[in-house]
Length: 388
Image 1 (cartoon, rainbow, N blue to C red):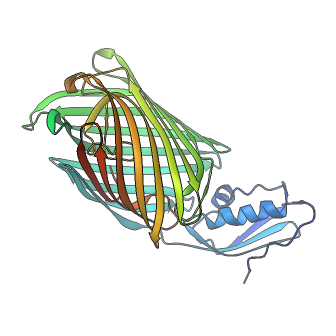
Image 2: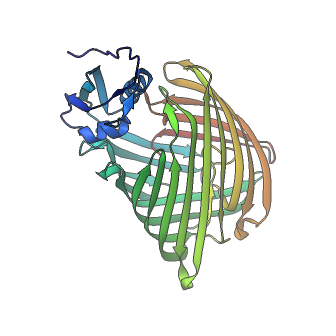
Image 3: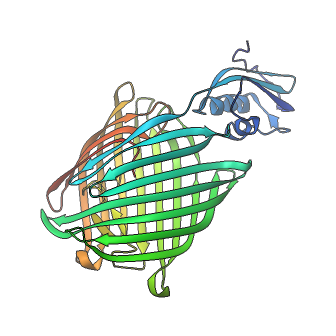
């Protein structure tokens, strides 16, 4: 039995080899990559402590012991059984979604993720098949595949007066190889969508098939806590879509989040988010509302051609992994033409509850109540498990 032993090192010592025992499923390459272990590099006592911390943050394994001796790092571990069902239950205003997702986050032992799921949302059937492994081919290259059928109910209101009401459903196919460079993830690949718009009676009004390219840059520069990241995460997405009539549409999305832990029991979250698209119709807009950053409206309720906003929230642990979350948000939103085409500057305040999966910064249960201070409306969101 190897114990957790990191000896005091006066001078840095070269890491010659890593010997792993107990890994019946997880590959050695995956452990080295996610543990950020680099052979033939000089390591200090502090470096070894960080390696152990990185290993303990890999959710798919349990590290039973480590030992560093004569330039060789010994790791004793065991794999966790990771296939489990995750509910998909969402309710916000008149929008609802009910379904089930099967989640496996150690596919082929490379710590990849496979997640098939089905659900029913208002008047339409939804389905998802998601696979991602950023180190499938080499330690720096992998792939993401997404097959998605998703429906959305839009009920945009101002002062409780309906301005735009419609449903939409779209099918998407996305295949994006990736490249890892230090804490940067670059993804790019082909994109196909088929979108259909329905009126309030369920009659199809508009539809379009489109092809294009998707690009993403993700900065994953953070250090995980028990249930929350620490530091900065940024994501930039570019959708380049050739739609009906041969016109190209471009949608840019950017998001930056910063988490500042005050202790292991409470922390602040700050965020900036925005998007813009060169189209003001139903087909290529972005539907916002009901998620973090848009809690002054119900989920999928604001058809916007552009948006920029700010989020600040405080999370205080009540017990176990249950947190109380007061928040403030500001959003500048330009509506599509059918919703008025105007620009809104709005503030929202509210309070919520979170229950987190252990050691994962994704809430298992969300309940938020938000107050839109500008049109004096109140909105709520209940989400259990995953969300489409």
